[in-house]
Image 1 (cartoon, rainbow, N blue to C red):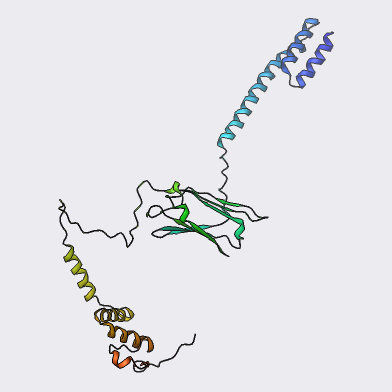
Image 2 (image 1 turned 90 degrees about the vertical axis):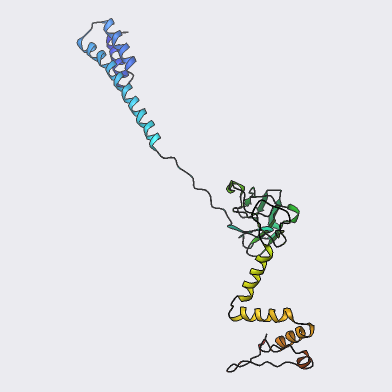
Length: 282
């Protein structure tokens, strides 16, 4: 191939940024002769351009990488549940309420496990709702029940242990053992055996409590109720019958303990001075 043709192809390669090919073609053109100063100058420029292009590409790649590192990750916010729920404790159960309004009963499926709850609400044409927590504590599945109401779904979880649930989900359970809920049936027995601890005089303590109750000053309805209970407690059968009859028939305005006086007649109301007795209509 003639030197002029090689030179033309070398220039094309140079324009296309193929500097390695351009350098090789310029060398072939010089070898084919006659060599000129322009050929040597152009061949010298090709490797320089090649290095510049390589450096520029490296810098660009580094900038892209740096920008990637500095770009904060996009955190998707947690999706809001379709229905809000809430719960509260009692001594023997946890009552969970899911505020699903107007849900057909046949669209609700609820299953109970030893420490699991599965709630599925699938209404045709709507996004399904699934709630499957591992519960704070164990339950008694056969005693659990639920009810689908017009404004909510009420679920009653029977506790296997009488402890206070500080959260519904086991993942939020504290490491410390929750406090046990005391019930009326669980009264502490009086110690009847020797103990290294200081002994408590339970009879004295009980007497002090009764004394405080007796001396307690009450106002209004509380005082009236206490007065009524105190009389009723110490009364015989006829006195109790007289008290109940007179109090009920007089709408709470008369209290008699004389059965002979009130037993054979209706007790009429007797309001305090300045008050008027009115009959309520239901």
